[in-house]
Length: 91
Image 1 (cartoon, rainbow, N blue to C red):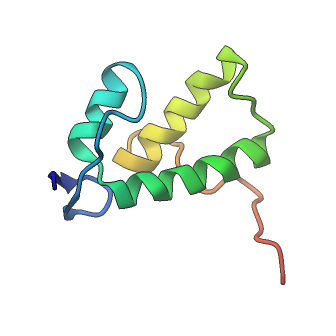
Image 2: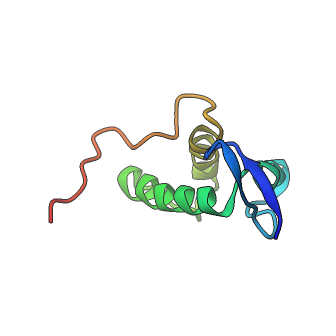
């Protein structure tokens, strides 16, 4: 099992098996983000896509998604938090 010092969790944790995203950002994630933190990001990504009505098929949205990813995983920039106006559904 490969471990990393996870930038999000701030502790040693099981690392990813391969870069989860292409290019330098994917390599950075692979080296610094745990499986558990990546799963948290995927859950947040669904929320961001739905709340902002983004399409991953639209290359124009990828810059926004990457900015959110950097904000969520590494605390960089102004993005990465919950989308403005987001309110969880009441059960």
